[in-house]
Image (cartoon, rainbow, N blue to C red; front, top):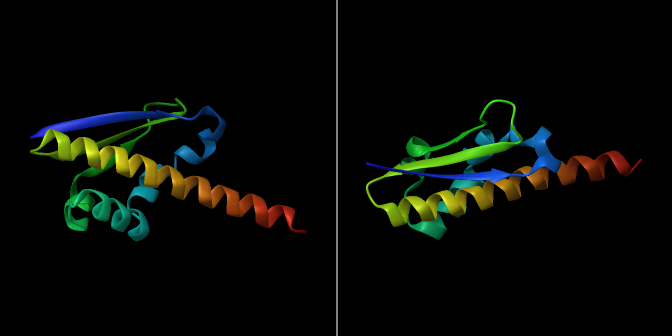
Length: 100
């Protein structure tokens, strides 16, 4: 089993990093990652994890898989898709607040 990890650091968006693990479990994110990598949504649901190390404004994204290249592709895709989701939600909340 190969465990691949990639850390994202985005200090400006630290309040939203806590939602990253939830974003990785969203159907839209998992479908996009599955489409990009060829890994099934079920395998993503079982093996994809995001952990915030302590109070640092970062998140470690990991995926366990028997193939290092596949694991790396999943972590990179999930990191990108998860970040897009979290930032999209933040943008929507910001826009809603400023419409009044």
